[in-house]
Image (tube, rainbow, N blue to C red; front, side):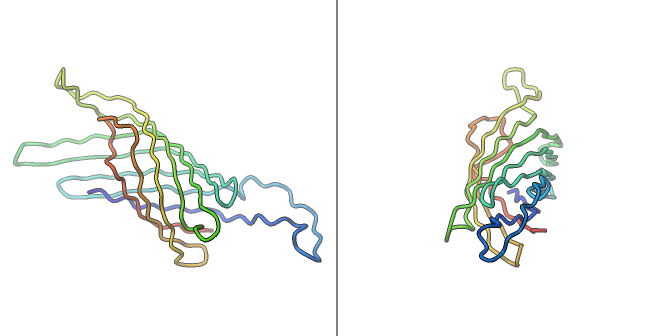
Length: 185
């Protein structure tokens, strides 16, 4: 079983209209793109007869306090050693992804829906030639998650993602369970 540990570091942004504060009149602040940008992503580790190392950083843009869209690279290393059957196999998976997260309103503001589209280059076993080759595949993922506050701008996050591709070359198994932390700046 592979467990991913996500580390998402969003920048907080306040969306308060200046004319909505009674008795205060301020000049509008100039737009600053970087106030809505955050860096995050995920990584996973597993060691033993099966070794797995994965890293998938994200550069995110916060369109609103509820809608976040990000993009970034994907890299995964896999190695399996089984002396009983003489297996000593290793490979890498690499590619890119785009992800969107939407936090539900009101009392469900800690629940989120997520969608992701990964394009990855994977090793693929060709049953006709009985050889390994590489192929690039697109993988749509959808999921739902929950964030539990553990501080003023910090959260513990758990989510489940489902691979909708049904592609036998996909490196993901359903459901893909992700856990991690979210630390605001």
